[in-house]
Amino acid sequence: MFSPRYSTILAFLTTLYSVQLSHRCVVADKCTIYSGGSCKNCVEQPGCAYCEKNKTCMEFNLVEDTLNKACEDQEWKYKQCVVTGKILLIALPVTGFVVLVALICFVYCCCCRRKRNSSKDEKEDAKLRKQRKVLKERHKEREKERREKRDEIRKKYGLTTA
Image 1 (cartoon, rainbow, N blue to C red):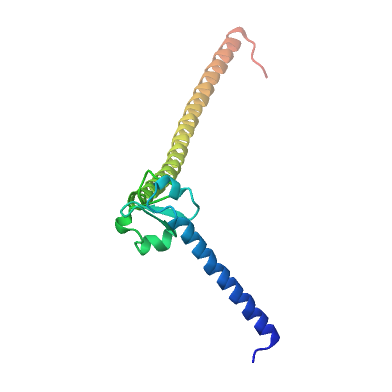
Image 2 (tube, rainbow, N blue to C red):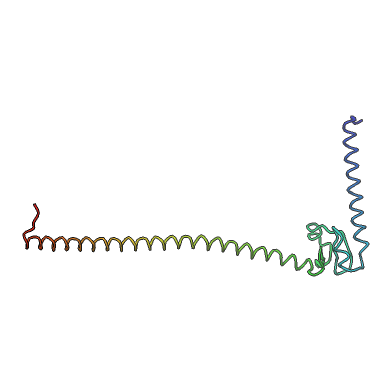
């Protein structure tokens, strides 16, 4: 019916599927052993979570079991026994939002300060240019006055140059 190539592939896929099913059973069995015990013993096992409401240890997939509400009122504890899933589902997104807003504010403030500092620098440069211009004008006026005084002294004593 099937060519040898297809039957080999089919056998391989069937083997993979049975291994996956047996692995799920092993994980589920491994977790259910700790039901009725302490939270700490349950959450130490990889892939297990402790349901606080009915004191059971269960296999836990974070996304699927949270959406399907595998534990009543989201009172599960995964990889720790301090905070329940309900608190984590509220606290983590809020913390992420606060960090995101803080990051946006930080970037915005850095950009605005750079613009303000550049405008301050431009104002200071303009002020310094104006001061230099005033100093040059004063210097030219004084130089002119000194030249006139020298010329007057030369005329007085008859030292005019040709």
